[in-house]
Length: 204
Image (cartoon, rainbow, N blue to C red; front, side):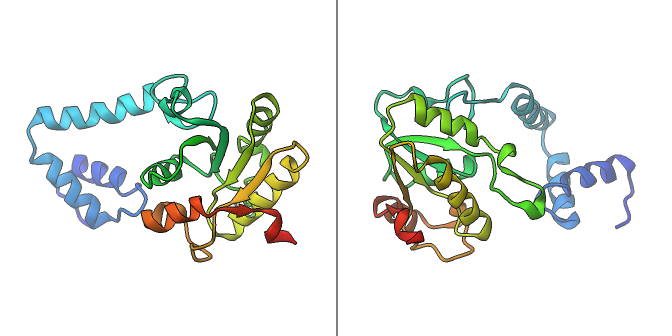
């Protein structure tokens, strides 16, 4: 792609580094911003700078937050005996949108994937174990994507938690194998949470 401006080329190059954004889409976005009032572009860029410099991760559940503890963990309305384990913040948002779950969360920050060089020590697994040991937790819901990496992570977590005296369940598989939670419709995901099953049934 030939550019008439080095500034334009640099901006397009940065946008095209975003997931799912090719050069043509990046060019369309950059030209759109170029045609906006300067204050709008400044507000847009400041939002990104603030996001990177000020965002925090909840010290309890590791979800993205504006404070040291997120609103879910500090809410008095949540059932603190339930912890739903998810891959990342997108899954928290997907489950919250179902209005079918009222417990707490624990964000792993990824899935075990030896092919990608991601092992248990790269995830917040030890923090989860500590929560189960210290808090009055009655059930752990493993709500991970129906993929090979998700199943590997679920099995590893089960081995780590099974002797800690808590119920371990997984979401019902109304979700096709290979599916990721963020792309599942809210009705299906909500039913999968409500009709969760003990994990032991999956390995019997």
